[in-house]
Length: 261
Ligand SMILES: Cc1cc2nc3c(=O)[nH]c(=O)nc-3n(C[C@H](O)[C@H](O)[C@H](O)COP(=O)(O)OP(=O)(O)OC[C@H]3O[C@@H](n4cnc5c(N)ncnc54)[C@H](O)[C@@H]3O)c2cc1C
Image (cartoon, rainbow, N blue to C red; front, side, top):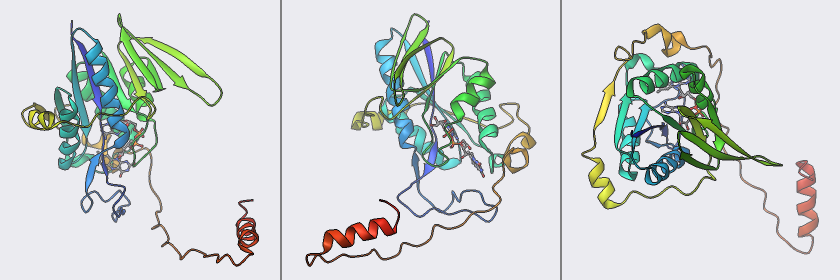
């Protein structure tokens, strides 16, 4: 039987552009360009490698996000994933991590899965909590923060590298895993892949399709709230030390003044 892999991919604001909060203190997603979260490219890559090593596997990429989040799906499809699922609904505005995990879990159950692959964290929220929340909601084991992954005989095995030791972990499928940016470079989409991605199926779902009530998500259903947010202070001009024989001393004094040394 085919191994059903679902990769969760997030569409995030481009970190190289200016990012702002909207009036309700949610992230302003309308006036910024977005892209597939870079850390999720590693999740797509590991899913592709698992598929290549398997007899028969199918990869579905799943995103919860606004209309433009389809760009993230197309990028993952052009890397080699087989099909996409896009959950989009106006009532999702303001959904927090718990709400997002509800939506993702319902969409994963509807799609059908043996293995869910996530990135280690999104590059905007960077909470790194979604894989654990998903495993709990789906009632399956989680093996997170893996730098090496393989699947064989209905078991997922991986290596988690810590500061002082590496652990070898395994879980019976179905399971949720997350992979780190040390798991291997993500491939670039080929021209053929980009053309093929245009024809791959993408299913659109809304909250009704997932039997989720509007008040379970959005700002109303959120368990967390942003009370205050401030713009990052503008950069000040740096201190230039002109070396006229005393450069090293001045440098040391500057670092000491900033309490770096
Ligand atoms: C339209 C919309 C509006 C939102 N508004 C708010 C808001 O106002 N306040 C707020 O707190 N949160 C909001 N969220 C949710 C927020 O953007 C995060 O998705 C959520 O809080 C998870 O936190 P994180 O990004 O730190 O995920 P992490 O836990 O860091 O993510 C880990 C992994 O989970 C997967 N993942 C995470 N998010 C998604 C996703 N959306 N789709 C697919 N896979 C995903 C990826 O594989 C990722 O690498 C909104 C989300 C959407 C879609």
